[in-house]
Length: 515
Image 1 (cartoon, rainbow, N blue to C red):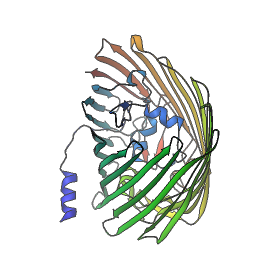
Image 2 (cartoon, rainbow, N blue to C red):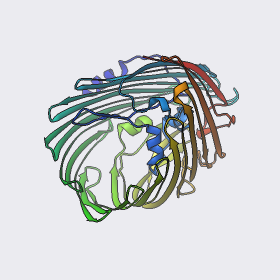
Image 3 (cartoon, rainbow, N blue to C red):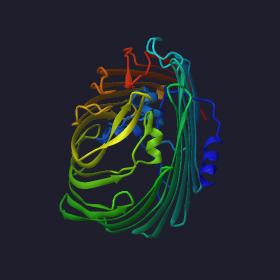
Image 4 (cartoon, rainbow, N blue to C red):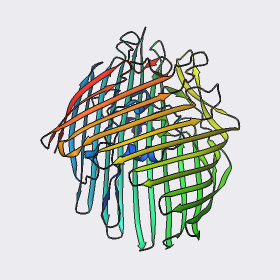
């Protein structure tokens, strides 16, 4: 009965706008502290400055838009805004239609953020030759509410994410994904130096696949839930103690996995600019008895101009509802955990306020690592796991910014993958630039991304991919903004996964109304 109610909840929403060529608007991360102040950051800038080394996962967003978007999230006009409401419409090639809307505000002790993104694109063809009339749909609804009370704040997050790929080849083949996560977090300040966090979360993911004859339907419902309790006390500005207890439940329809762990951590000042974070993690799971690792970080910071750290840590994660909702064409998986020890170092240099450089090197010693396999009969991907394997990754990003004038960043990442692994690329290069002048409301954004070849199947290897996108926008008065964007300017025959094309050169135009 419980799973029937979950299925009813998932199928109940009906939202009609959708597509794959998503225009990612500048996303702002909000944090309300105990004084109800609001901080905003550019998500793309944050990603570039602190790029994680694990870009290799191939998600549905990569097929439908993801890293190929022209809108870079660097728009100068969107920074440091507490109250913001807008609605945006766009239409372009491949019958690409979309609507985006956002409303956010602080009213006394309440902060809210409501956003909706709906897209529809008909035709995944390259130059109208391959997979003509194959359509992409995408609907995303995100809500956040934060209530700030005396010594306590409560945050509620709810999302609904729907994705559908309607393949039209010899027969119709439908792939349908839905994901509904909910999180409730309570932060209670015991005194000026300590607080208690309690977080409860639940997520539901439904996947449906038809076989290549369009007859049988494969359904998979995954359910996640859990609770996270943490206590932190600051003894001084440079010394704290934190303890965290976590329990997670993963329901795979045919099996369940229970996981819990304890994490204890503290830091100490060793000398001028030198510090150490030290702790440990110990836990257990129904799919693997015991796991654990030390958490050690050595840090050095020189006048906020140069910072470097050395880390030893670990990771243990099970396949879950959130990942299933993102993975591309994934119809089969194993609940076996992906576990590893991590040895890494990272640095950041800021010699001038307008210039910065960051980089990292990481070696992961995997006990189990998930890799992709391809089913040639179903023409779909599945997960399998390797035995013990080591993976070396490294990356560097260089950037510069001048307030209200430009942002620019260059990023390169290397991943020492095994040659036979599917859907992984050893090299990726990014160049992003944003030029604008706020007083006249003009903005120009461009992004160039290069991927080294990747194995799509055992016998099929992609070419090197070169993606060039740009976007031009101009404000008219205070409430209207007109924009034009062109994606895949070089008209590349792009495949991120086997048999599915990103499409040729794409042009879109539209209007944004600010309120």
